[in-house]
Image (cartoon, rainbow, N blue to C red; front, top):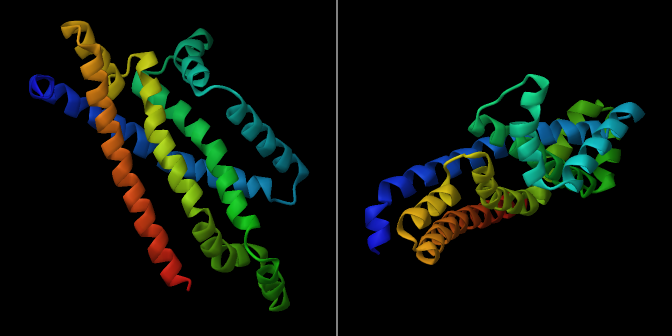
Amino acid sequence: MDLLIDFLPDLLTGLGVTIVLGVISFVLGSVLGALVTLARISSSRVLRALAAAYVSVFRGTPLLIQIMIVYFGLPQLGLEIPPIPSAIIAFTLFSAAYLSENFRAGILGVDKGQWEAAASMAMPYWRTLRRIIFPQAIRIATPAVGSRFVALMKDTSLASAVTVVELTRVAEGIGTSTFRYMEALLLVGLLYWMVNTLLQIGQQTLEKRMRRAYA
């Protein structure tokens, strides 16, 4: 308890950075993931191939390596990015690859009869997506997307590898100054758990509302 009292300002600052990293990366990753999804289901073979390659690369390599490439590797090419933007870029690119697959699964999960019904009414392709397919796909994809958000919030701990002072980095600092690593790590782990529990409650609430809306 005394650690919590003594280091409360540091913990709150680290928690704030963790939440900012997670939220911004998730929002940007969702936008990029949606674009990748559109490329995956487009009629263009080139776009489909590029999107598939993107997903394969970012899902097939460790997130920590991606963070280090952005922060340590890009300066060798003349592009130096501060720690927090570097982490956000890496988290965004990584999460977009997974989210694009969640979105694509949602679209593919919509009954094919919906497409056929729209085609019978001569509804244009993009209008069909926007007004019929996307609303249903979002409902289908919500559990997977919510789980990805929770996972991303935990992944933000890897930003400590590039000197971002988020919760994990704060725990390391507390342990270094007090030599009470176990207590510091357990305390920070508790904070992660509390944040992700709130996210899971929000996800479950959203799922219930969407089920009622589409019942």
